[in-house]
Each structure stands twice: as C-alpha cells, then as structure tokens.
Length: 262
Image (cartoon, rainbow, N blue to C red; front, top):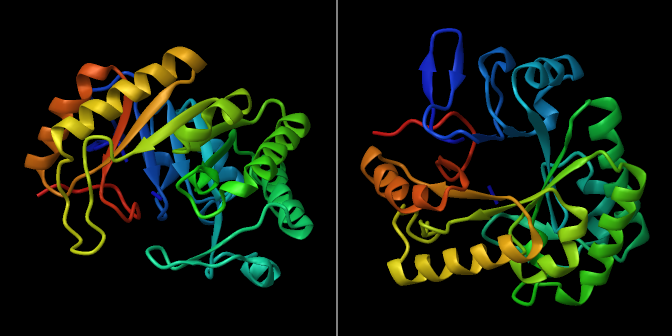
C-alpha cells in the first residue's frame, strides 16, 4: 500500500534531483502547488474535476488510487461489496475483494469510468495486484484479474494504468499496464514496531537484478517506492537506488502529506 521527497519553492512544490520524478499523496493538498512531476498519484475523492485539470496542466500524468484486491471500510462503495469479500487484511484493516463476483467486477469497472469521465484523470494506480500472485491471499483469482484488466483496456484504451507490485504475475498483466511501481526495494518498514529501516543489502541487490530482468523482458517502466522518516535514512536510500536510473519516490508510510524529514 502506499511523494518523491520535495522542497517548498516559492509558488510550487517541485522535485529537484530526478528527471522522471513522481509524487504519491493520498491526503488533501492545494493542486496549484504541485508542479513538474511526470506522475502524480492521489486520492480522487479529495479533488474536483477542476482540481484535476489544474494538476494536468502542471504535470505530465495524473492518476487516482484504486485497490483491485481489497476495500477499506472508509470507501464509499464498501457497503455495496462487503457481503462479497473473502477475509480481512489485519495490517491495513481492509477486506479482500472477489473479482469473480459479478457485482464486485461491475462496481470496480464503474470506478474506472468515474475516474475518466467524472474526474478527468489520466488513469489509475492499481494497488494490491500482488493479492493475485502466488504469495497473495487469492492466487486462484488471477484469471479474473486478467479478464478485468482486459475489459478496462478494451473500454478505455487511452487510460494510463500503473500497477503496484505483482511482479510474479507480470507475464499476465504487462500487456495491459503502462508501468509498474515496486515498494520497499531498498527499505523494509517494520509494521509491528513501526520502524523505518534499510533492507538487507543482499536482498536489495537480488531484488534489483530481478527488476532489471523484468524491465528487459517486458519493456515496462519501473518506479521505486521507498519509505524513510529522517534525512539520514533518506540519503542512504538515495545512495542505493540512484545508480538504477529508475524513477523513485521517498516518503513516510501513511502517504497523507508532503514528507518532512528530520
């Protein structure tokens, strides 16, 4: 689940040290302040179509958030889907979706239409896709996910889809997506102790090699999403990830505001 680190610069917020910078923020913010990002990912409920238009004028691609694997109680559509869920994710206090269920399938498809027509977004950031992989709670539902993505691309061929994780099913999804975001390649946030930390160097290097192989085989752009809470940790993360040349984001785990590093 899910802000390239940023600096306040006069009239706007702008990333400084990466050509293909990206921004993730699920909290509210002033759209006029967000400028010069290649990708902005936000929570669409906070913004009007006019807000989105302002963001699109000042940034390349503006995406809303949607989970294809789970639904939170705070979601406006939770009540219509709760009786069809398959269990609970205790870490995020969310409920596992069943894409084989017709009502769930159609409701999520409606949300894609809302993103494109009502909000005017360029596309969506697809969270919890890894639920359908071999280590997720619903690997047997992978055909339903692929069918859903196929339907989305058939209906909205111009829609930009950024997949979060799900590297173990990229061979099935790559033809429908425009990029893949990978969380915690250099970092390894501890959800039990709530500590920000670096990942073991060997694990980091193995993940990088795996991602390079995926990038080469499927020609899918990669964005790294890393979590840090201090300048010191952020700088260590940068030392690790910048040689890859991949676009990246560094922020705090809740993604509710522009990151501030102490």
